[in-house]
Image (cartoon, rainbow, N blue to C red; front, side):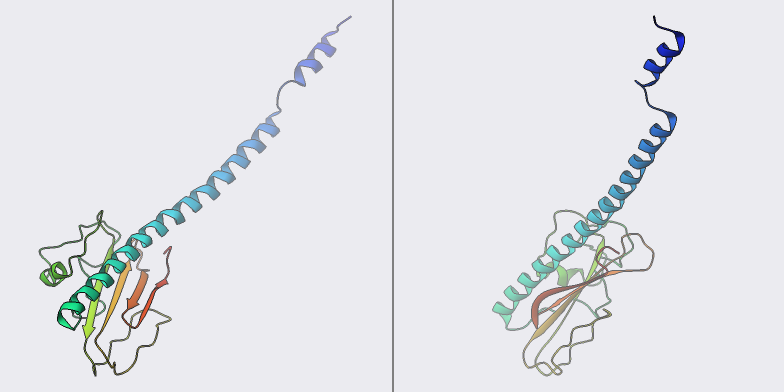
Length: 184
């Protein structure tokens, strides 16, 4: 014989309690928050990889220019004279006809697949000229004075426009790209 109490217990065992549902919702929320932070880092790192690709293209262009002229192309007034514009978290086309250094950058013939959020600077000099110090915190050291033609490429990006910049640096003195604050 089935009583009302037995019937209620058998149905209660088939469902979830409110506490169990709240626990599952809390776990899903925590996992979503962790995934969102990871996704944000992934997006920031992908923007930095675009800057690395542009810097590699600049290096190749500089070496081609040196093969023809025996010197490197000096396109920027300083390592903080950003082209196509100062980093502000907004995307911009790589070529900026209104920029004072546009003609020199076009001589480098660097192309990008999409707009960039980074600003770039290229400073070059000849033997006997002291290279400028980079603006990075843990700056690499250069020969002072240089014994052959040289160039330095620096890139800066401020993805969230908070004043903290991702800085990338490479030069003819070494083949590495130094990165600081990559996921800024």
